[in-house]
Amino acid sequence: MNGKQVLVVSATRAEARYVPRDWELLITGIGKVGAATAVAGALGKFEPGGLPLVVNIGTAGALHAHHGGLYVPGTVLNHDISADAIRALGHDVADRITLADGDESVLATGDAFIADAATRDVLAQRADLVDMEGFAVAYAAQAAGARCRLVKHVSDHADDSALDWPAMIDASARVLGRWLTDNI
Image 1: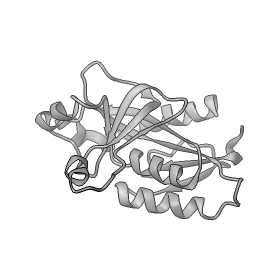
Image 2: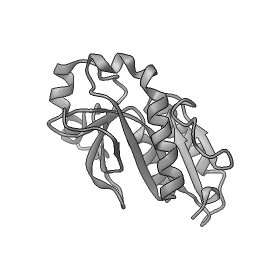
Image 3: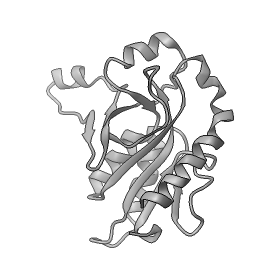
């Protein structure tokens, strides 16, 4: 596989700084709505049967002190949707996606920027990492029939260290760019 058969998706240009220049890159903006909309729009431009592998790269907060480095989550959760309440009303809702070729880590995606230890600790009961786009990217890819991988590099520990996220992006972007060239 080469970069031409891959759609690299990132929330920000800073996180995608080291993506090889000849690869197709989609910048979605931060958050689930922008990510889902951008990915759906991009995949709608491909011919049927010619969908690329969607690879969402980006930073993530670690929900446990022992997590650090790079992860390819095998499960992604939509953590800030009231799934149980919606199901109680008689409607089904997708709040969990299993991804092929992922590791054992669980990524929780939500529109809330997690930067306090109390919120982190509650979320840590369900997941290992937290971001703001992964579930939306995986959901849009799945809806289009495209394969998807999430690749996340820990930039902080989802506490007050998250407020230093802008200073950590370049180090994460280097690791993510290297992963792409070594693994795709």
